[in-house]
Structures are given as C-alpha cells and as structure tokens.
Image (cartoon, rainbow, N blue to C red; front, side, top):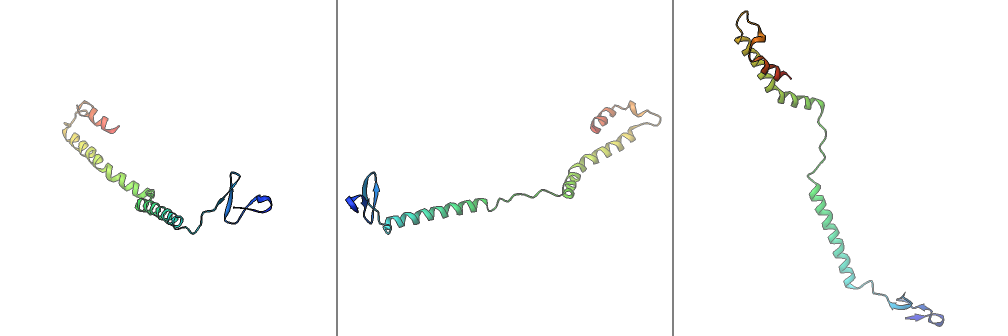
Amino acid sequence: GYSGTLCATCANQFRATGGRCEQCVQASSPSIWFKMLLGVAALLLVIYAIYRRTRGHQVPQPASAGSQLKTLMVLQAPGLLQVVQLWAVLSQLRRPGQSISNLPEIPYVEALQL
C-alpha cells in the first residue's frame, strides 16, 4: 500500500495509521449500509416515542381572574350560608330584653368570624 518517492506515502485506497499504510474499508460494504439504516431507524423510533409521550401533555394556561373569582365564590358559599343561618337561630334564641353578650353561643360565633 505504499507509493511515491521512497514509498513515503500511501497509495490510493490506503490510509496511514501508526506509521503504516492500511487498506481502507469499502464504503459500499453492505454491513456499513445496514448499520447506518439500523441507526436511522433507532433514531426515528426514539423521536416517535418522545412525540407520543409529550403529545397529550400541554402546558396549562393560567385561569382568568373572573373564573378564579367564580370558583372562590362557589367554594365559600356554603360557609357563608351557615354563618347567616346561625345568626338567624341566635336572634330567635334571645329573649326580649336579654343582652346578647350573655348567650353561651357568642364565643362560638366569634370564633367562626375569625
């Protein structure tokens, strides 16, 4: 695989490796094409797997202030209703002329208002 003056260079289809000329592997070899095709197929399979995994996962958009307010009102409505009903019951329990501060339920109502 040597050529040139004093055989100092490698001939065509040879390459220099470690001070020696070795024959180049044929690029048209079926095993090289098979390996390249296998590599491309593996790469496409990985890309497809990533696509399938992330297709359904989209970043949620932040909710608008109106929809957040509506959700908050719906969640707090039962508590507000109970407080209003409790005040109605307490007002019926009070006897005429009785001070409201003497009722035993007042600390409970005050704790609910915090």
